[in-house]
Amino acid sequence: MLEIEIPGREPLRLTHLLLDYNGTLAVDGQLLPGVARRLESLAGPLTIRVVTADTFGAAAARTEALPVGLEILEPGRQDERKAALVRTLGPACVAAVGNGLNDRLMLETAALGIAIVQGEGAAAATLAAADVVVPDIAAALDLLLHPKRLVATLRV
Image (cartoon, rainbow, N blue to C red):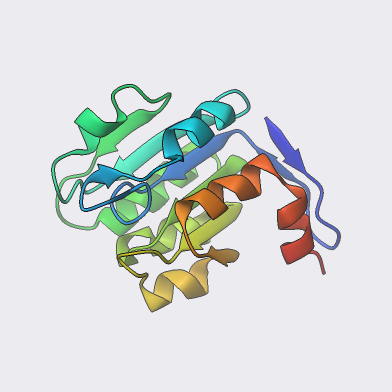
């Protein structure tokens, strides 16, 4: 578990990390540099799942050696399926990271929603649903590896 005390907010007690794949962990189907190392560091305190539409069909091969579970979603209402997964895990213990419109409800439902804006950009509605917006996946994962950064951003 990852516990983060943020003044003015309920403490975060995170046990799950949900991640979108393309546009978040990868660009054009290729895993981004530094992602594997960061996920390995977070796999101790968190259970990590990649939930994806798998636009490029590469998620299974690229995540095979990573300490993550993988769920590939069928087309249609992927936003609702991602949010339902958060609800199944218990929203209070979930951090979620994504960039696409189909990630909006997942970020909104999770205790901690992190939107990233990198090569693919990000949907405006997803940015509005997030607790924090960062420029790339390294910065998003580093917020969890160095929680004082979250405290500095989210304290009231």
